[in-house]
Length: 108
Image (cartoon, rainbow, N blue to C red):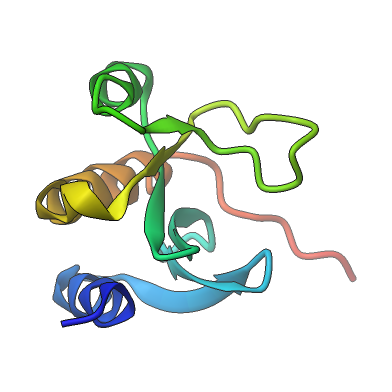
């Protein structure tokens, strides 16, 4: 199974998750429209609460997500493919976390 197939499998197994796009990559969104996880360069990136982010950052090679190389995104942790066995748990935690955040406002 490729890492992209693994991402798709995780997304399909998460209740209420929707697949969307963020930074030109596939992402998992909560019902409130907030992104919870991104598939990025054969890795997964998760929006985690502070405690989960600290745990994820303890994995070798995990890092704060910095897609443009100029400004790290607080609360977003990039987890390498060699730790894909953790992706399901982090995706669920991320989805639960972003579901508690205020819904996106729509511009008119």
